[in-house]
Image (tube, rainbow, N blue to C red; front, top):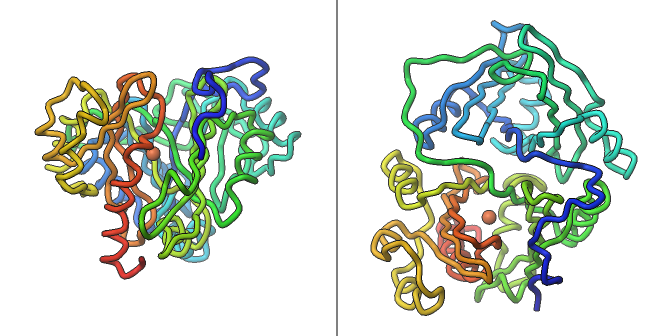
Amino acid sequence: MSIISAPNALKPNTDNDFLPLQGTDYVEFYVGNAKQVAHYYKSAFGFQSVAYAGPETGSKDKASYVVRQNKLTFVFTTALRPDHPIAEHVQLHGDGVKVLALRVDDAESAWKETTSRGGKSCMEPTTLADKWGEVVLSGIQTYGDTIHIFVERNNYTGPFMPGYKEWKTIYNPPSTGLLYVDHCVGNVGWNQMDPWVRFYQDVMGFRNILSFDDNDISTEYSALMSKVMSNGNGYVKFPINEPAEGKKKSQVEEYLEFYKGEGVQHVAMATSNIVETVQQLKERGVEFLQVPSSYYEDLLSRVGHIDEDLAPLKELSILVDRDDEGYLLQIFTKPVEDRPTVFFEIIQRKGAQSFGKGNFKALFEAIEREQSARGNL
Ligand code: FE2
């Protein structure tokens, strides 16, 4: 069995941090039709229009839409020609996450520190400038075709970055209360979890703060293993999943099969009022996994006192779990595209810094019902 290796594993530790991160700068998705995807995230999730790049701004072969909600920034990018690498990415993977961008004070130092430790460069330090100042970018590859871009923007006051213009629209649906990226989970192949754990340790200076083995994360039918990597100050957390043997196909295997390789499985977005946020998301058409009502029968005996009324949690299928420091509430969307790949988690932390281990079984049974309906279990 598993769980936290050291008593203070979840506590921040910034000693000797060679890659200080201020958090997630943005998440960029490569998609088939960025204009429509941007509209979906505005309508369904309550993001606001921020910036646009395309032929009108000098970007002749791709278009990007930037949307934001509090500290969450998503970029949706599409190719304008079929022989473009972005079109090939979408052809292979479907719509998916290409970039997990991390905010730094010094993008050149981030690049030097990581590439000198074995990180494979995908972008040498590059300075972009316009009338609003300058942004320095650099990048390294991570699992699958996913990359990390280091973003230095302390000297920039524009809407997003050079090359983009402000995107104003008359259609501005209200926010749903989503605040920031809590964590981003990667799915990797068989026996690839530990190599990627070592990558985050050695190349990026992250620590393994939690581990779950297949005894923790299994149902009657399928299993997976997971290790949570955190940077020094704890602002950036990347759990890494790999499939494990079960009677039937692991959800991670289904992902790998349909994404055609390793990639981002889910992005967890924080809220300070999960009941209100999920109510609004549901009204706007976001679909969530449901757990059976029996989940709520002995919930309070499992997690103790919680501030929220049980009725709305049950009605919305919101899950609760407790650890030594408090509790958390969470819920998972169904995949947001036709391939069963990327989905979202909505999470509200009330002290707990963990990831809902107590919910894994109920959750994975819910995922298996969906897998089975797709004929992929
Ligand atoms: Fe998660």
